[in-house]
Amino acid sequence: MTRLSLSLACWGYDRTEALQRGAVRPDGIDLNFQVLDVEETFFRMLRNREFDVAELSMSSYCVTLGRENLGFIAIPVFPSRFFRHSCIFVSAKSGIEKPEDLVGKRIGVPEYQMTAPVWIRGILQDEYGIDPASVTYVTGGEEEPGREEKLKLNLPDKFKVEPIGPTQTLTRMLADGEIDALHTARAPSTFYSEPGKVRRLFPNFVDVEKAYFAKTGIFPIMHVVAIRRDVYEKNRWIAQALYKAFVEAQQLSYEQLLVSASLKTMLPWQIAAVEDTIATMGRGWWPYGIEKNRHVIETFTRYHHEQGLSPRQLTIEEMFAPETFAEFRI
Image 1 (tube, helix red, strand yellow):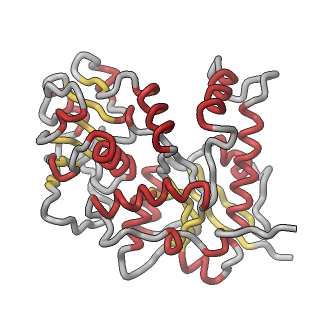
Image 2 (cartoon, helix red, strand yellow; image 1 turned 90 degrees about the vertical axis):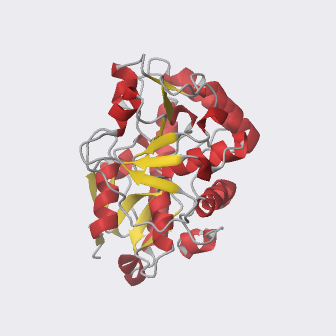
């Protein structure tokens, strides 16, 4: 019987490794798995729709759902999650000591619509009372000049967003004090090379993030897995087939992280870290599926709308393939 051949672009995560090497195969599908950095995957999928299936920025995906031409449909698989308190960096010249000091400042973001800054702005609003419209956002390349928003935005006038110059980078501007802070997904290189000039807003970020999870139950979702809508419409069974395969691959990773005979990663205290994570967040600390993530997704879609990136708050029903909302039982 002929299997359907699909291309899949995704970073090389532990939770997708079994799919990458073929140890897990989706029902009826042969995957051409391409391991790419996430920025390349997002750019190529959003601009050119080059892949049948791809890891995609949660925010970028939500932006596309507000457009007339719906190019993608997601399945509730979340290859990237990240607490983002650690990703608020400040210039030593800014005088910023606490979150409330960010009000009125110039804050760099590689792209306004990036998922990480959406979460950061939302958390700062909910937890510290900082209105996302109370600062000026400065956009552009973090480490290389010339970065632009992957998707054209039409933001309400209250949000102040301006691009940096064609030869500037946010990393250099932060160290030099030309911007006061940076909301980002990747730590700026100057945080490591010039530690006297760049620091984290929350140096004790692990404690802060654990307290945030204990209070909210939110482990922020960064990325979804999206199928090109034309591919999905021709073979709607692939949504469930892919979802099942991602779940199976992730389960193998859960099991391997607790093997002490030989460590899966290069972390010397890997087992202790896993046991601490289970004690803090539960055994299935990285859930896939709709119901276990409903509160997280609805919080994000609220932020997305409040920050002017979607004309209304999106519903979960319009975000994910209906085939993935329920599973058979015997």
